[in-house]
Image 1 (cartoon, rainbow, N blue to C red):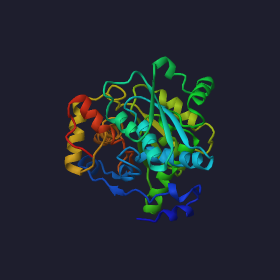
Image 2 (cartoon, rainbow, N blue to C red):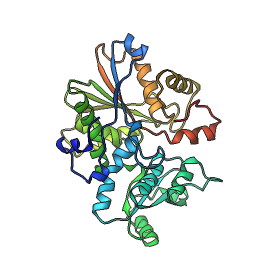
Image 3 (cartoon, rainbow, N blue to C red):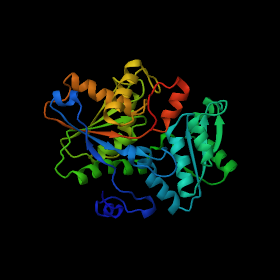
Length: 330
C-alpha cells in the first residue's frame, strides 16, 4: 500500500498531511454471475478507508469531506454546520470528523427527535455534535441565506456543509477514486465505473476523472429519475466531463426501502465474500450489477469497477429499526 505522500505526485490538490491517506484496496470480485457473463469486475474497498471514531467517517463520506475539512481549517473555522435526516450517514460522518479533527459540530436534523434517539444520532451526540431538530417545512430552507444567517446568529460563525456533503470540494475528493484505481492497476482499462447515488456527488466527481471510452453508472438509491437533473447540474460547469448514465431500476421502492430479495442477497453476499454491504446504498448497487450481468446488460469482455462507498454505520440502526434482518455486524 502506498504512502500518503505519493498522492502529491498525482496532480491532485495538495492539502495538509492531516487529511491525506493511503489508497483503499482494489480487489477482484469473482461472482458466478460475472464469470458466466464474461465480465472482469473489481471492487474499490472504500469501506476500509476509515478515519476517526467508529465507521461513520469512511468511504465516500470521507472523500467528500476531506477537502472541505482542509478548507475549513485553512480558513480559520472551528465549527462545522450541516443538515440531514435522523439516519443520515452524512450527519454521522461530520460528527466523526469533528471528533477526529477538533471541530465543533452542529447538525440540523429534519423532523422531531426520536425517543431515545437512534444509533446514528447517539453516535453523533457522543462525538460532541449539537443536534438541532426542525420541522420539515423549516428544513426545506436549508439553503436559504436568511435561514443560514439566523443559524449563524444563534451558533456563531461556521463552515457550512450542505446536506449530503455534495459541493465542488466534494467532487475533488470523489475524483480521487478513479485516480487511485489507475495508480494501483496501471493496466486497468475500466469500461464502466459503478457507484451508488444519493445526491450524485460521488458519481459526478468520478465522471470528471474517468477516461474517454469509459462510462460512469450511477445507481440511484432513490425513487424517480430526478437525480438525472441533479447530476447534470453538478457537471454543467465541466464541458470536458465524461460519459455517464443514471440507473433507476434498483431502488426497491425508494430511500431506505427494501424487499426480501435484497436482504437475502446481502446476507448471502456477506457469507460468501466476507464483505458487509449496507441496505441503503452499496447493497442496491451490487444487487443491480449482479442482475444486469444475468441479463447480459454489459458486453462480454467488459471490465467494471464497483465502488464500495461505505455507509456501514447505518447497519446497526437498520437492524434496530427492523428487527435484525441483516445477519452481520461490520
